[in-house]
Image 1 (tube, rainbow, N blue to C red):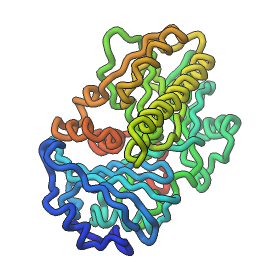
Image 2 (image 1 turned 180 degrees about the vertical axis):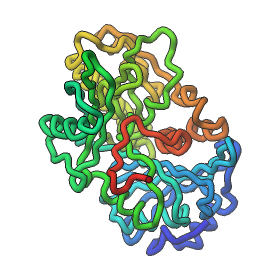
Image 3 (image 1 turned 135 degrees about the horizontal axis):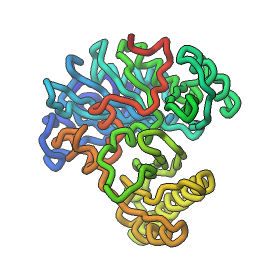
Length: 380
């Protein structure tokens, strides 16, 4: 494993290399755990978790990245024919918002080859999703019309230099168009976008976290209607997303919450109380999203809410939500929903390390529900 991304560290590169010596691509997550170290990336204090067998050639490697402004999750899969294997992953928690140089250094050391394909998901509290209709228009006219209409309902400028945004169009009655707009300020993703461009990787898609996962959930239970809602939780924040058929109906960012504070010097009693407080905060965020969603769609709400990635201790809250909102709420193992997209060996890693879910599914499935990639960065 290369030591470049952990330069300027109080922990020497040689010590870190010794700590992770022998960690390689593994068939099951219980053989070796990823090494967690406090280090510096281009001068910034950073908590890193590594599992990799060294830098990769980039040939046949697809990378999925999830970025939320201070945390970066990177998963590398290698495809050989129809088979995929886990090459490694990084999670990096920066004390401050990372710079382009810091992200570039981390990514370049992980997969140094130019041309590596990457799928990106961004978590942002400023992301918006809006739905509206357009009259009958020629295909060549509808993008300009959708941008003009969308600007009325988005609180920032829909210009490529200021925003990441994309549309989906479905035929409506009388030759009209039903439009879904997804957008976020470009500044919320700029450091990772510029880093990807700087190291010569090939950006294939940009999604809002949560929506990219829902697009791969093709195995909906038979007792659900066309409208389904899912909460996907990933350690300190989540997304509440509703779909009507295969089209986004609603998106609500949940979080961020602090990391679950169990690894502290506190007493067991204090840890239990902190975990209880954390769970209540998560429950409050999901309850608020449910209330907002049902208020926005009182005539056609989802009848079932699926919770993915939440701790088992959430069970008492499930009963509360069912009684309060009158809908079926179930806890679902997210790994079981991705059998068509993620190889079995990789699903085992996701089950052990849930924070890898979004990045791993992006790397394996390689698509976005609504792609926000600017034309200047799109693959031609």
